[in-house]
Image (cartoon, rainbow, N blue to C red):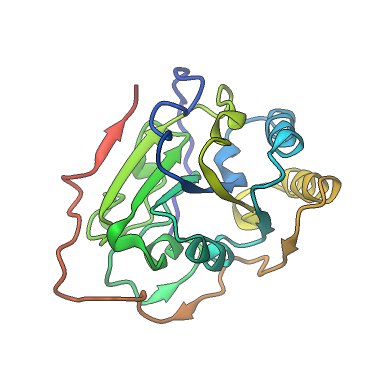
Length: 228
């Protein structure tokens, strides 16, 4: 079960440009990243991001996060950056593909890097793994978790080296006002949109591609925690 408890958000960094230079990446943005922010702030930041985006970067919008998996896989990059309240990452032994496990199903994960950008200081608040250690047991080559305050984040600093953008509504984790704002933003900016399950409970029972039961996995000790 995803933990939706709130906590105070530290007001620190203004941008994300520190570590996203040099290597191309796919950018995933979940609306619930702004769970504890105001709707006007969400509309303002995402609106500016969509209006000013370079038109040569492919972009799509989906209702449920697992619907982005096809887009992430076909980019063939080696870095996934996910702005999200939740980690959406499970152990390599996961058998159910859904909104809280889709990152574990990325085809190129075993030689790639996953960066979870979260709004809360405590990563356990958004951990999807039952172990409450957000990246324990994963077979991603490298994982990193970063704290960024949504109230101060400059989304437009993320255009550089971005090879694709995916927007996710996550209706089960935001209120109706934010849902309506999301729909208006993608409609006004003519973003392609794929509908899904309003309940977020749709899942597919299968192992991740390239699953190896005995492969070396990340036990959580090797992950980087970057907060300043």
